[in-house]
Each structure stands twice: as structure tokens, then as C-alpha cells.
Image 1: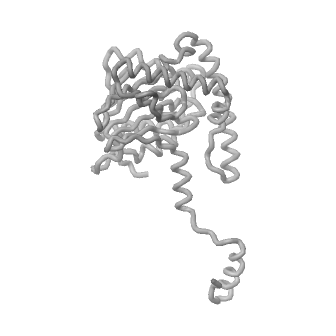
Image 2: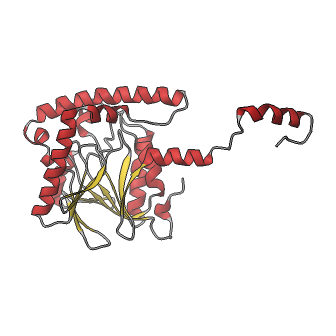
Image 3: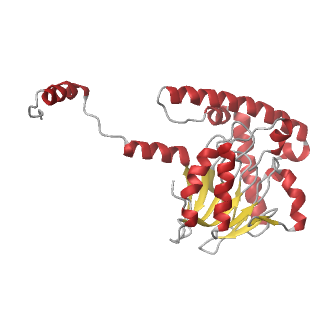
Amino acid sequence: MRDQAQSPKAPLYRAVFVSDVHLGTKGSQPEMLNAFLADASCEKLYLVGDIIDGWRLRKSWFWDRHHDALLRTILRHAKHGTEVIYIPGNHDEMVRAWLPLGLEIAGIKLMEEAVHVTAKGEKLLVIHGDAFDSVVRYAKFLAHLGDHAYTVALVANRWFNWGRRHFGYPYWSLSAWLKRQVKEAVKFIDSFEVALSQEARNREMDGVICGHIHHAEMRMIGETRYFNTGDWVESCTALVEHHDGRFELIDWPSVIRASRREAAPARLPATAAAPVADALAENAPIPA
């Protein structure tokens, strides 16, 4: 794809927000994110935590060419004028040790949190959100145990989608579907969203943008705007702000499916195929 980060044209988006890529895990889908970011030129790119999975990399090393390609694309954005802001999460918490130093690495700013001002003048708190997850905050052992179970689900998801590709079906997240069926998970997501929205209100913000729970969402909670970027392990979603201040959740697998449908050649009905073939063979007019 064309790299619009190098284009002199106006950026496609005012801001792009992505989180929970979990580079270093086999469930991560850096090639999907790279395909999106290669053309998603923007004024600001927010990396909202868990971009690199330090938890997993400490246990076993996994890094391939798709990981490298994604990092190169992000660095190209920074090099060609995009303001790139990296807000670490709990899986890349090793980066938090560098925050007091105020470092900027290859044009990428490291920040504990940020305030994004929209084109309409709204102030949005940008934060990963793990501090509002009581399991991560108070019982890290349970969080790691949950991480192991989640890894097992992602392995199942990978094989499930291998089978779908084999039979010509597009990507569909089994692990995300399973999570939505668990009543306690649904209750947790709701309480997490309410807690983040309350924090934004306490800080006199108009809304909050976060990640962490791998559940893309865009809704009003009371008078507060709540956005969750989703992830690039299951759903492959990103939040974008257009130049008029309008926000949109980009569901990248849906974009890919739509583009394939548009590119697919029109097919004749089976009943018409034989007469057309016969006509071509005899150099005769094709029947209407």
C-alpha cells in the first residue's frame, strides 16, 4: 500500500488512536495494523498502551518480520510530521520507568497520559486504563492467571481462523465472541467503562479514550463521552477523529471484507453459465 505518511497531501485523519497490539505474542496481528496505518495518515497518532507485550516476551521470545514492518511504519509517521504519543499500559509497563525522564525516542513522545483537544474544542483524557482494573491493580497474580487463559483462547482463535481461510471465509474473532458470552465479563466491561467516565468527569474533561479491555466502544455515559479503541489481537479496531471533530471506530476486518466484495468480479447465475460457454465455443451470439 502507498505510504501516505510521506505524502504532501493533507492527512486523512486529524487523529488516530490504537492500543493493545501485544507485539511479542503469537495472537498479535501486526500485519493487519500495518495495512491500516500505511494509508492512515494523521496529524496525531496515539499508541494507547500494551503495544509491546513485555509479560509474554519475558517468558518466551517471539518476533517476526510483521512486527518489524509495523515498527518501521510507525517510525515513518513520526519522521514525516505526525506527532506520535506512546502511553504505556500494564503489559508494556517497563516503559513506565522511562516516563520521569521525559524521553522522546525517534520522534515518539513517551507520556503517562495525555489530553487530546478535539476539533470542536472538547478535552478528552487519553489513558490506557489498567489503573481502573481492580484485578490488575490489586491482584497481579490473578491478572497473570487470566492472561494465561486468554492466551489459550487466542491459540484456539488462530486455528479457528486458519480453518475459515482454508474454506474461503473471512476473519472472525472466536475469542471475542466467547468473551461476550460470559456474563461476568460483560458486567466487568460495564463497570470499567463507568469508572473511566467518572474519572474524566472528576477531572472536568468532556470524555475519555482508553484501551486495556479489548472491547471497542463509543458511547455516552451520562454527559461524558466514552471511547475504547479495542485491540489488534481480536477485533482489529482503531478510533479515528476526522477533521470536523467527528469520531469513528474503524473495524479493519470489515473494511477488508467490503473491499474484497467491491473487487470481486460479477458472477453469472449457474443456469446461464452453460449457454454462455457453448456460445463462446461456437463463436455464436451470447444468449440474453
